[in-house]
Length: 637
Image 1 (cartoon, rainbow, N blue to C red):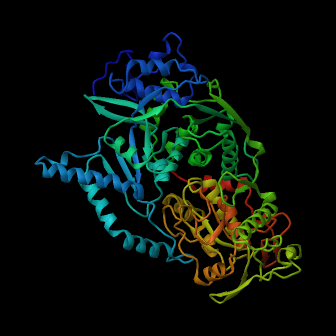
Image 2: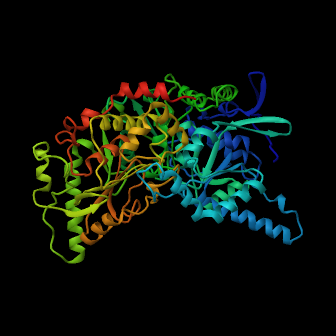
Image 3: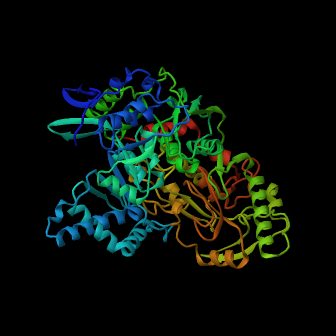
């Protein structure tokens, strides 16, 4: 590619005795009317991309000048060509891209040419993570049986992808049973600063990507620009074509303070999602800034970035700072690479500290982290946050409205106000007298399964899934779930027999620190065995409910619930039989599995009766100090 370099931006950066060619943002900071030093970090990355790819064809000098002088508050439209560093595919949406490459090779062969000339021009990683289903659960054999069925169902696709890995240049496949594409991207693939060889020089520039999954934005927590696109756009990027886009509006989200004890990253992201949905950020960049960033570990940032599709933004971006460097070292990308990231970002004005002046934004919003409280979201949309302290009355209101709507649509009479939820047959009336109102006028539907007799009612929790994606990148909530499970088992509590439990971590790293912490056994004692490493419940791969449960739900038109630590909870998505689905942190998933019902006030009602009497959530909830100590002890590089 020819590069006019009309701004004289090409320069050399020396890091630990090695030389890198960079395209300096400072070269356009001196233009008359330049706003470079006040631009959001995300727009600076776009500007570097234009500067580096100036070719007088896709990117003209005028494009660079326009962004270098950009007024973030002006209502102006300007189209630019953004060329990503790489492409990320997952197996469902990525396979068609590989099929097209195979078809092009066939066409080249038929024309008498060399088919091996057909390859992606940009580096491509395809992660097989969307094909595992929770058929088996609650046993040590769950992972092996689910993996076996996955290979049986997808053998032809997997053989084809193995061909692609062996035949194509610039193309890698991460095999099944490894983890979800977003966490693999975060832990292994993301570089923050990318390098390539060109005419004998090593070019250094910001990492960026497009991916064929909407939650590609999880990588934004690492300071990497990326978002989800359709297959055609991904394929165009694979073949070296730039992404055509308007210079976006950038909404600044200022964070200050620190999360209070008892509040998790999940509670934070549900609060952020609720706020940004009301702010209407569809089609915009959201960039986080403020002193509060220094209190958020990178895993918390990735949790927030992951949910960008739920709050509607193109991405939720966190600039590179000391937390980014710490994470690179923790995940085995320290040493020379971390030094390059630090040097490059500081040289380009892309490194954030608490002393960094606030950039200019199109609009701003802010949150005091100390106000975040335990929450869940549902029953049908991720932006509908429910404070945990109000979960019981809000559930009952939602249930009544849902039943009334169904009655009206079927022409029947409106039902009486919903008051019933799953009972706890193994708990004595004296121990849970406060919960008696829940079953005052509904005996439920009797079910017998695996030697247990119980009653199903509206609000019974039939699926409890620590599922991949949003939360399983985060040791604080994952270890929190394990510690809560350990405390529950020690008190003599058990998961209710009607709950289908599963644990599908985003990567095998989670299993490593669970084993190191001695928490795998208590999780398994409550039925949360590892069922696979991949997208499961969140994308509808929750598998079938046990036949007695399914029959009772269908025949009696019960509104039963799923609780999951994912990011999507639309009706019909998790499982066709769970009309209500709630997003929450992994510790709360375990808590609701113990309770077995949504109609519970954790402040006044026990989870159940243990060996020494009633046990409340507060009795087994791990303290922040306990979680932090376990992270320090168990999470290693």
